[in-house]
Image (tube, rainbow, N blue to C red; front, side):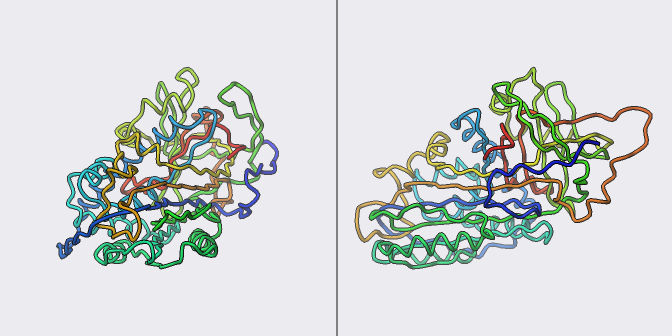
Length: 426
């Protein structure tokens, strides 16, 4: 059965052995702006299920765009871990401060050009509510706007929309006070159970506001992986080097797929509202980095449609991942140019600057943390790993670079999307 090995830690700050996945957020530093504009008065009828699904479909398209672009811009030998849900939520809030071509580019990026913005706010609110309703897994989403009233006069219509539809706190701080950075980072830490200790490195003299989304996810497996069967195996890196890692293992019924070019498995969490998908190209196809660039959201939809339920032997490495990235260049490559341009950005619906001519986005900081191990289930002893059979079951061993997707099953909303090149490093 293999000996039980001690899990290799990537980050000593993540001490809990419960399955948890945390992410974070997007932060926008708005630097300087102009004119006012009234926000629409949302008195629309009740949101229906199809509208929520339409937003979720747009979100899935955006998720793949963001993930592919981030992977293409990152060193191919490094892991990538983004939270499309967090990024999508933060950008949706920012939409309400944009006008003109800036707004058009942002809506195109989010695949929401066909939606009326006031209606989109309503749908987005119900969508986030649906994603948080499970109870188990635990998913909490928090939003906040931090600003310096001596640097910007925020329009009440903008802050009202954030408060009404995104439950965003509206906080005023003196950005010249060193304690402000500490207070904002503490808010981030509080919203993520201390797993993301902060997002701000500094607040400059030009910064006028921060728009932050923080997301926390924690779940147990529907059927756990018995730690007695965890064993050391080799994981093959991009350069062909083999490293030793602890792999969880189970022989039981899974929802999985085996195609000519790849294989994958979809493992549900307790209550089966969320799942973790692992997808791995066959070695003759190339590494995950090569393969990702040929994929899109339609591939994922088709993949789930073709998955079958049956007995399989599944093994994957214990992971304890962290990632941080400024997504500014990634979003610009996806067509969101004007928002980052001092001369072209139009965030006149956000507020009026009290210094400088124009507001624009200066950075989009993103941090994530995700841990996956055999102890993601309370009832690991109930794992069925020893069926009697007359032939060996299909074997899915994720021992070279692979993709991970943590999703809401009903809507295919992506909480996390990652590329694992090395399970032993962040």
